Image 1 (cartoon, rainbow, N blue to C red):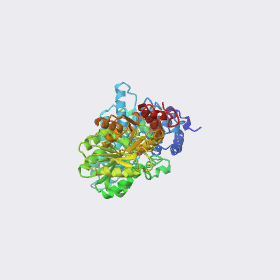
Image 2 (image 1 turned 90 degrees about the vertical axis):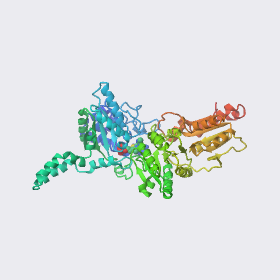
Image 3 (image 1 turned 135 degrees about the vertical axis):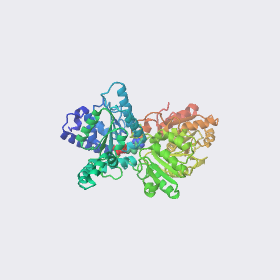
Image 4 (image 1 turned 60 degrees about the horizontal axis):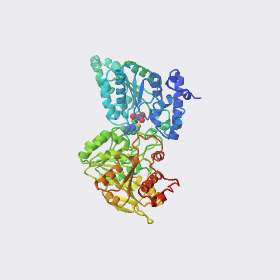
Length: 637
Ligand SMILES: Cc1ncc(C[n+]2csc(CCOP(=O)(O)OP(=O)(O)O)c2C)c(N)n1
């Protein structure tokens, strides 16, 4: 039995010797590597926080003390130390452990949102609440990376925490110099300066020993310098920035020296007010393959970079082509250059790409500024993270009718990252934005086509949304309907029973459904709207020719494309019934994309059955009889 297998909870850590802790750290690293290689997951960040997490659990008393992991991708070690070693092999698998803290999994897990830069705000609230409730012996610990610290929320929180002088709050800045890529920006430069500069004490030593020996100017100069020690500190030790905010700063300390970290945490815990502990770690520590990985220190396995054949890569390649033709097109990423597919664009046009840090709100308003000055910015973010920048899209971009294109990767069900990562909100919140146009390509050709159309729009914002993973086969239109593509029409003597509009890749699902329904004697016209906002008015005319309209989208059902179609039909007094299929408006858990789609019934098989039933309900007699044979040989009612 390994030492790690004996750890059933944080209390089991407390009696271990330093040698045992070193052994434990090794066992944890082995298990992290072995598991994530099989299940995928965040390897580099977790390898970097092994000693830090051990120290946290030895010093603090979880769950009485609260530990908030910012983003939560680095909480695997915490999972292992809080009784989940046996289940760790199920990481990110359907029904298994989640890839982030999970309140359902453990009383030691608190925050599971996984959107970055929130930990300090949660911690601020928790610490204030414990004070007000008369529980002053509880400490709140927030672990935040230097990447997450580039997000605006973190700074709003720091501003408030600094004013809450008696909050028992320990903020651990886990500084490894990396987000996905090296962390950028002014703050990152400050932190880097702390990491690489000689400690200011050494400089003072030098001044003390060298200058007094210099005749005439020596002693007076030393005195002056001594008086301006704080000034020197400013130059050499930029943590003064935190101290000037009114925060007690401790560090920088070596985050891989468990004893040192423990000692610093004890001091921070006993201080009785907010303390910022600056810990320097190495992403991927202890695994050369990760430490030396130039792209992202194996931030994630398999790599989140835009591999050939993925939607991200198709987008990235087209951006390079557009960039050559359109010098006014610039790109923005929020700390995700490689995962969003912008790496090639950055290589081709290094002056025309901006990595703004994990700062989606800033990304969008900065794009508004770029657009106001005559450029056409393309902001490439994961769909789920656009939620952060809704108001910026609405008021800063759309109100000013600015030509900004938002490219939303990972739209729809994403898979193993779970509830916080499914891109199932954008299709609804973007429907609310006046003047917004939303494109949903069904295949690679349409990515290129629609992206080009989007950057041609000069009087308002556009969205291009596509899913995670590999692009499927190409599907050519058989006809046009207004600006939409008709992918299939009823054949074999079948009449126009169902008009099915599938948004993006769901148009391909629509084709499969049409095939199944044809077997039941139901004729289907399959349409790819290409643009899901505004809905093409030609759809109203086509609806009149059918007995049922069906929409399918890989987005929450509420307020998405389907609702927009239903509204269009109402507005045009079209009486044909509409069925809108999409994701249930719930927080969907993790699993593969196919597993999740199957569970929510967004597969050709489930949908065909439901549509067959709907048609049958409206056509007692002929169709129902055929339909009851069932798509899968099962009765449908
Ligand atoms: C709002 C938001 N944008 C983007 C991401 C994607 N993301 C996940 S981890 C990460 C980098 C985090 O860097 P850091 O906080 O320094 O932690 P490290 O991985 O280096 O330990 C990013 C950009 C996110 N989780 N949330």
